[in-house]
Image (tube, rainbow, N blue to C red; front, side, top):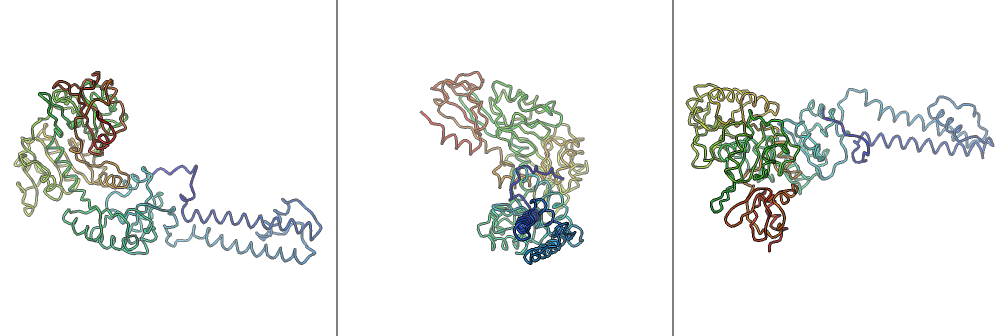
Length: 552
């Protein structure tokens, strides 16, 4: 169960419908009692000529409304006071019935609870129409980013469980306009669908209620993207294909952005922290890259999420990939220490094996450079793999060339088969780099124990893709979006490279200076007006640099 939010400073819009009803009831009851108390006190003094304290009048009003008695004030001589007492009694009876029907009985009756009563006020929020992956993982991601949402869940038990755990979930059919209205679809800014064949119906119904709605759809196959675009989907995401592409890029492109300069080479390269690295648990601030005078840590992948730049408090784990910039020779020297294995070959890998030739495996092969030798393995002849066979059998992997391969990409259909494939491949080759896809995020650790070097979970990636769309996070972005450019050094003249690298909030960093045909990357190097600085960063950060940093 997720942690409950602190109620201090709770805003009225954060109250559920039932909570707002309770607040209105309590305030209304207080006003009625106060009104009768003041009128009764005035009547006792003016009409009955029996003045008393306001607290005595309050006691009498409460006794009358609850029909527990009139106390010592009865009887009353004037007709007006008798009518007033009857009015107080009738009001008390009515309030009693309302209390029972609206507040008490719903707590004990066994009829299905309307989960809509638990929703807080929504505006400019996200409506999630079904979600077929780990729902709690997605909702926790949204709540961590303080993003308003409503999940429409067709399974009543799941909806009730999620609502009881404090999530903003209702039971309903997202193809029905009435259920979309309960999620205030007309005030939403984004619709997320993960409903398979029902996606088109859901999207069309939602757009009738809100034509300005932005729509993201998860789909099993990239072949449906064109059709989904026709019905109004702004972005279709196929997690299997996306992860397959990412795994292939990591397996085949260890050097991502070269910049050659008169005999010196400044590279941006990914260094994978493998399962046997001695740096597990070390914080970024204590890593050898940060403390290296000639290298710059540009970015880092942490469980598939790009941190640009990484936080000093981020920890290196078996699923971490550091994006390092600097002289190629310096990167080569430090790769052994970071990765926990002998340096990977800088040239394109000679042999890749792709285990599983479905949607993910096909995307992986398509993402590989043309000069990469790849062998595909699948149990289905219909998919036309290079090797037909069970990838969980050692003979099949041997036939595919696992013992001579530099990397294995695992995109098989289920997690059990993936874990077995990883374990068998590792037993056959201690040097092969294993990059795997799992469905359940809980299987990530098991995959590492089986021998994987890099693992991406469909559930985790899907949740972060939603966060990327709503909150602008960078998730699963290709590393080739990190660029190197040369720029005029005048704005940095007089600073050392260490000073120029100190600001980690801007998304770009100075990795070196070019002077007289030589690139200098030592942090103690002083930047001179006639130098050229070499800047590394994402596409957006480089564009921002070019807009905001003046040149001479």
